[in-house]
Image (cartoon, rainbow, N blue to C red; front, side):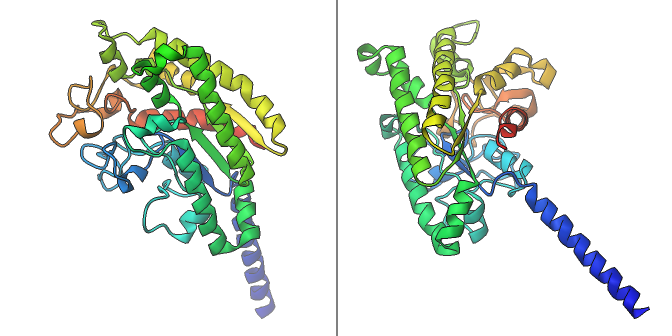
Length: 350
């Protein structure tokens, strides 16, 4: 009898171990690191002297705990949702947060900064973190990771991680209202931004990164604030800006296979953010949206950042709005986008 009980215990323990091991092997990435602007920033700007912050009401209205965290939306962003879907953790912690746990360090952090771009100049006016500074923060991160688990294990984590980059929108919206437009045509400017993007990937590769997902530009000519600035009474998308975004994306998509070929052992996947977002804007009813040209905050025409605040009236049902403020989508849009990433980009990583 005792022998039978012992055998059952051994079998049970073996089964539990197998399930635990199986769950671990389902993890596609050891960690995910995010670089980019406000669509990815989960709170880094809270820790730098900038006015480009979303750490006040009504941001975070539907975030767990109903609190503003620095995320420019009513709830969670793609980094939070993707981390959760890929079984890494519930949120994507900003690297500049003071009390990061060892587990947070080991499973990936967020370097994105609202208001930033690939170009350093884009961040200068708002005093945010351009891509170059985000990459420098990654170097600081590597030192912390090595201090926790050692050089060998740190290298393994970085090699098996995903580096997710979504930037460029702020570069182009700044270009349209800058003197640079008179000195450089849009094609030349696109090439200039692409060179910085390419250099950023190469540097991250030299630091151990091997798996990259680069998002193209969204149809930023359809954001409420760009429509407002265009002065169109019919509030149609700004076609010129959307065409420019598509032209840039075409160049980026063609560039990546050659870049991958030059970085031995790398895997670089293009994410068609334009198509993902345009699908929602072209078929709002299909996804349950009613309002696509105004944000939920204030008049929905110009309010973003500090102009979207506790004194701003808020729409009753933010889930029927594509945009939460005059620039940034609602959590519902980010959920749909995350599903698009899981279906179209993630499977390309073996």
